[in-house]
View 1: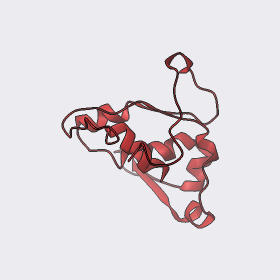
View 2: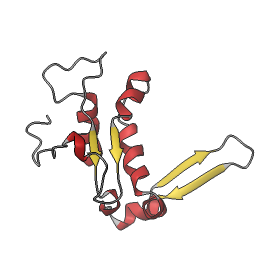
View 3: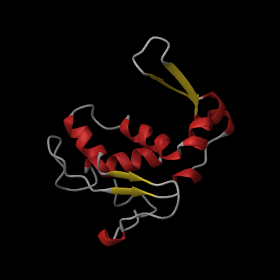
View 4: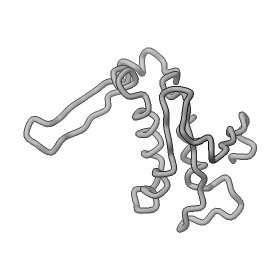
Length: 122
């Protein structure tokens, strides 16, 4: 749910002036990424795979292992899968900033929290 909400704001679908061919989305800062809750079954069974391109370079990692090592990457991969696979999607994904803890260097931009209900984000 969190990732789909973030992807919606990054794409600008919550704005009345949304256009599919333009980047009208907002910047999103995600804090406390290390505190996301996932069921134990999903932690153990969901597998992230990658390949380096070299022979024998196939690597697999469970969600639990990735959460322990790099919790920001879990949210980044979930959101990136919901954005378009074009240059527009790359541009939108650059607006996403994820931090494992509560601290971030974006105080000068005066970020506002997203409303709890989906009323404004729909």
